[in-house]
Image (cartoon, rainbow, N blue to C red; front, side, top):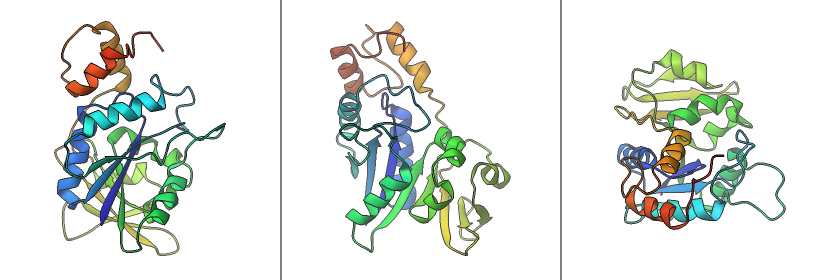
Length: 223
């Protein structure tokens, strides 16, 4: 099995998320992409606009009918939780739940890549799961090296593949998703949904998700 973990707020899940996951599924021949809404995100202490249950429900609607896409509750909030969910810990849980021959990947959008250095135990994460990155157009090796706390070198087998090496000699890999450019700001999207709440369509949100947002009157008040 080849499984990619795709974590995030998904507040709400939008077409950019789906495009990234589809591109990763095709590029890496993934058997499964796990969409995992996060309970409490370390770099967003204010929390999410929608509740975890609402975000999980919207993810389920967004991925319905997509081969290999599944909702994961690994990052669900725990009772009386006071500390954030950390990707390193979640990947450990995911690894323990899989057979030894399962190959794990971590799927990152362009915005997540830009905060990656600040994640807990960031330098260790790529050695738990290979990275798949939706980079911005014309991003160079130097750009990637500045964003990641691990040594990056090119791999001759392809223009979008890189080798990651840590000081003790462990190796992993990073794959860029080429020609993928979705600049969708979740903050701006929520603002648009608030100002256009009566609209029947949105070019950035799956229709089933938009209907859910309308039904439960989400994003109508300013954060």
